[in-house]
Amino acid sequence: MEFLIKNDAIITKQKSECIVVSIDSGKNQSDLIKDLDQCTQGLVSQLIKSGDVSGELGKITFLYPFTNVLKQKIVFVGCGKAKEFDLIKSKKVIQAVTKELLSKQVKNITWDLLTFNPALSTDLAKQIPQIIGEMTYRFDVFKSQKAPTLHLSKVTLLCADRKLVEKITNNLLQGKIIADAITSTKTLADMPANICNAQYLAEQAMIYLDKTYPLLKVTCLGEKELAKLNMNAYLAVGRGSKNESIMTVIEYQGAKDKKAQPYVLVGKGLTFDSGGISIKPSAGMDEMKYDMCGAATVYGVMQAVAELKLPINVIGVMAGCENMPDGNAYRPGDILTTMSGTTVEIINTDAEGRLVLCDALTYVGRYNPKVVIDIATLTGACIVALGHHYTGVMGNNDSLVTQLVASSNKIGDKAWALPIDKDFQEQIKSTCADIVNAGGRDGGTITAACFLSRFTEKYQWAHLDIAGTAWKSGAKKGATGRPVAMLIQYLLDQKV
Ligand code: BES
Ligand code: MN
Ligand code: ZN
Image (cartoon, rainbow, N blue to C red; front, side, top):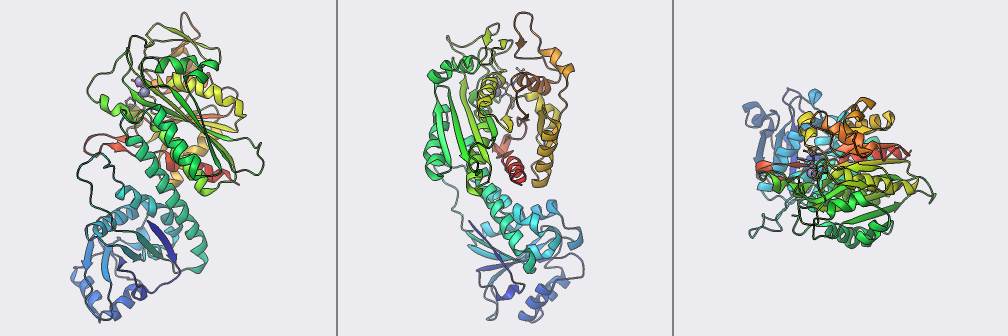
């Protein structure tokens, strides 16, 4: 889908198939409406007066072309009061319009939304591609009956203020890149585990990211290489599976200085988590194909980093693996020696994400990272704490945590900081090893982070628990693409 900005204020002049007109619920209609009214010999103000066209938030009125002077279709959309218009209201408006355009099979539109409340226009420009992207995403590769093809392909937004054109154009482009990254993440995450295993993750990165972007370089470490590195915790988790554990490393060099310290992202890539010998209950186990959403997030963010050509170095790691029960599987009671040398007593084989991550986090130490952020569907406890609304943020550096939360608010991909102090470390003490892999029910999200903190002491580190935010259950079952937007915003905020 193409998005364009046009520095123009006369909507009736626009030659697109359809014009979308934002309606104020108060008495003051914009100059755009006055022009439209003239063109239609007063019809529009009549329609507004009679209430047929309403300013009520999200209310749609569709008109087919009706005169020789105005050959375009018109969609009126109620936006409430212009002064009270905000990003939350705008989302409702954009969703209502998109739904109408899709059902009427409109191909291209011109819209005055950015002129409705100019103060909001720069933020809006970033949101529009994301909202339309979300509404037009389909995962129907396995459906015999495909969803109807999408017709909407070109969206032109009017911008009356010449001074804002550059900023808005830039934001619109960023919004489009974020929307595309979210689509890539969702497409990967929605793939079922019988197709999407660790090798599939590696192949997608090789076939698409490595080939498409000269600035991205992809390398893969299979079980042989992981064994050479003593990544025994990572390997133990994958031992019960027929599918090979593979860690995929995606390197981006955008800084002028090749040696500039990189931002490192590490994604949990459990392509299926059955729980292993500590097997999960069957109800809802199907959803554990989404346990690789951390890795899928890394994939999407790396794509966006390359598209944006950010002037920083970034390394993305997808820690691919499958947790299955089997004669060869690791068991409760086992003691593992991790890559760092720290020993772990296994209490529960379903607390596997932290085992895969701890070795991956030790491994990335070799890059002399500026910061390391891991992204993981790590604990059910995070859903209990923050529901499906907020990603949980923890780390060993307050300023990094604060920055991540700030970036999340800026882009509307919400995150909340949880405390991780020494008191919680008590819960992961072991009688026979250095630590246990499961610290009990209480504060489960935080004790999981405490476990990771034992492997990240050499650098600034943050952990994002996305168990509640990475996918939706029920009728709308599917990946959400979170927290791709938040991470891209964080990296955008770093470049100066
Ligand atoms: N992948 C799960 C966490 C999860 C559960 C994400 C439900 C989304 C929805 C993780 O590997 C896991 O099983 N965690 C256990 C840890 C426990 C055994 C300490 C959990 O949360 O129950
Ligand atoms: Mn698990
Ligand atoms: Zn898991």
